[in-house]
Image (cartoon, rainbow, N blue to C red; front, side, top):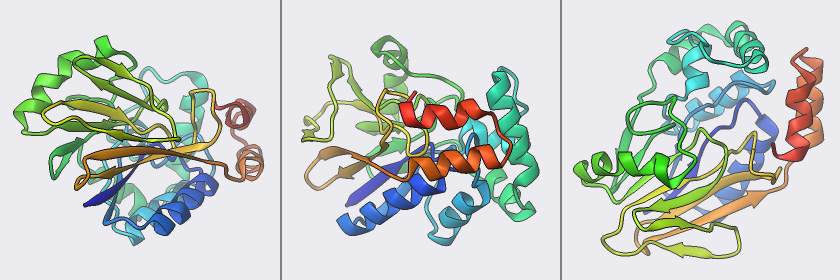
Length: 241
């Protein structure tokens, strides 16, 4: 099976459509979304509509949970808070209901799909030390890979360390090894690269590949300003921060 793994579109329809076009060109068996379809950017309904129309299995992200009222935005910074409340007001009732029904974790073949960590959508796994305590739980599920998002920064982690990940080569997953793989963000990258990020997992070849794509950043930024959202959210798109 060939899976496209996407995460953190954050209502950026320009980035999302660009990524989907590339995925369709590649040809995959299934697309999986690791959450945060909404928040920060200006097209929350459009992004949720695509997920629903294409029946893409989706994990509930922390911004999804706040936008649909499952959680309150405790700990959100002022910019994220403003965007979250704006999103909650903008989402149609049917999309709010759909978000409320999303799972926290899903298993596919031999891998788990989560947003933040296997136990908490709000957990940030930035470093090897952050990832290590969660590995036993994934092993108990009979999985060899855990795909996660939330940090908006792609990376590959295993018990023996951290691996460099780029879009110039495929990464061979060793037999019997456990990996945590962050696919980065479609709609708001934060690793210094403003291009949209997503991954392809080929279970037959046991390979993972990261993709980075240019998209109409200027249009996405203009929509943020027009919607009355904080200008910082528009500016950061150009910087990948």
